[in-house]
Picture (cartoon, rainbow, N blue to C red):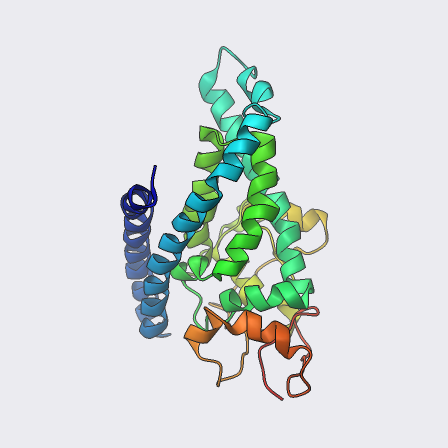
Length: 294
C-alpha cells in the first residue's frame, strides 16, 4: 500500500472516528462546564483538534516509511515470539482466547509505557518532548493526542518495536492498541469529574488521571499508568483521587513560548538551551526541564 492509499485509510479509519469521538465528548464536557460553572477553553480545544488531524497524517507517513523494518521483524520472529502461545491457547474457545490475548497485550503495553512515562518525567531530555502534552491549560479529551511527533518516533522504537517482537502485528495487538491509544486515551483525559468508586484501583478514569496532570506540587510524579492503576500501586506511584471537582491542570511554561513552537521546534531548542546560561531548570516535576526563561 502506497502513501496516498495509507493516508486515505487514515482519514477513514483513524481521523474521522477520532473527530466523532472528540465531538461527542466535547458535548458532554460543555454540559458539565455549564452545570459546574467552570467554562471550558474553546480555543485550546479547537487548536488540539487541528493538531490531531496533522499529527495523524504525519504518523501514518512515518509508519509507511518504517513498515519494511517492522515487516522484517515480523518475518524474523515468525509472527511474534508469543504467536504460537496465543494460537494454541484454549483452542476450543476462540472468544475467550481473544479476550485473554487482548488483556495480556494491554497489560504488557501498559507496563512498558509506565516505565517509559516515568522516564519522560525523570529525564530532562525526554521531558522536553513530553512537556507539550502537559502544557495543555485545560485538559480535555483532545489532550490525549496532544503529543510531539518526535516523542511518537521515540515510542515507535522503544515501545512498539519490542512489543511487535513479542506479539507480532496480529489482530489482538491492533485491537488492544486502538483501545488504549484512542478510546481509553480520550476517555482518560475527558473534562469530566467521573468517580469510579472502588473500581478506581482496577481501571483508570478521568478523575484518577487528572491527578497526574494537576499543577499541585503534591501531585507530581504519580499515576503514570494508562489503563491499570495496579501498576502504579505496585511501584509506589499511586495517588488516589479526592472528591471536590476538577483539579487545575497545565504545566507552567513561559508565556513567550507559543503553542506552535512547543508543537514543533521547542524540544530541539530546549535541548541546545540546556548548555546556555540564559536558560535555567526550575524545581518541580522530577528532574524535568520546564520551558521557562531566566
